[in-house]
Length: 215
Image (cartoon, rainbow, N blue to C red):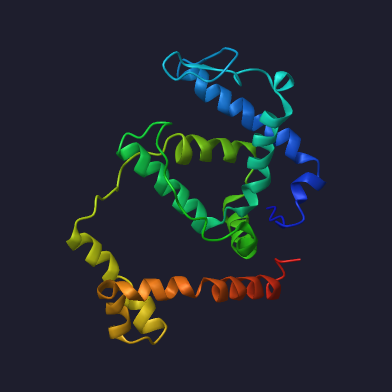
């Protein structure tokens, strides 16, 4: 199971970026063609379902190719928690009937670098994540992701989710219940947290350095 570094762009060093970028473009084209889109020069036109980039890789301008290369270079930024957020975003989009004109913003909460031991455990238990496994994962978890288990939150439901933090906040970290309640009741608390962003960034950088991620 491969767990590449991030900052030294190991995919590029191994000559895989271009190969995977071509595959990503082919995947993107296949999705559009299946939806009835065709190639046409000029600007993309939604009402006509025409797109200038629906063409073989060899015919694309380099700036278009670079979009797919950047996608591939960014893959190691997706850790298990970040992938869970991505899947939740897909569910949200499907539940609300979003289209390509809508935007869902989520957070990649961690990177692949943090899961080396976990990936090794999964490889030992499930076997290597090879081409066939990747095809199954794409078909089931990405293309086949449905809208089940999506809950549109009322105030009561939001409070219920907030209260789930009692275990990690109070029992595990030893914080006061009053501190937990302030997250719900005190709007100024979150403004104070925002002011701590520079120190939080420093702490993340320090952790990455100690973990051997930052180079």
